[in-house]
Amino acid sequence: MNVNKITLLLAELKDHIQHKSVLNEDVSKASVEWHLSHTIQIFSAICKNATQSAPEEYQYAFNKNRFKIWLIGYIPRGIGRSPKAFLNQEELTEEQLLAFLNRAEELFEDFQKVSKNHFFTHPIFGQLNKKRTLWFLHLHTKHHLKIIRDIIKK
Image (cartoon, rainbow, N blue to C red; front, side, top):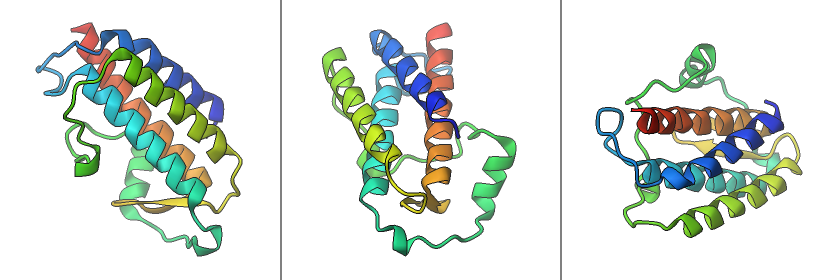
């Protein structure tokens, strides 16, 4: 996965902060703000966890769910559930969202410097090494950006 593509997605997230209060329940029960907050929280947690992982503990294992999503190239809407720790309930200001996004970018810079076997463990996809973590960061961010675009467009 090209790091520049992920950087562009982060820039697009930043562009959508101004639309944080937009809600369209025909698209999602959650507002743009929720999708922004969720995406940034997940992104940051993954980068931080992978950076702090012990690469010698990484073990590749085939995962059919990961393989299916890799084949189709996107996360179908409505099949995933956010972990409770990432279900933001408080309203955030544009400044708070921007600060969280800036922190996510810093964590991403740190993550880019780690070795190929640094990893994070996804609850469904299992251990993802650096290459697969980049794939997932792109996939997950792109998934929520599509929803955000649809919410704003309607």
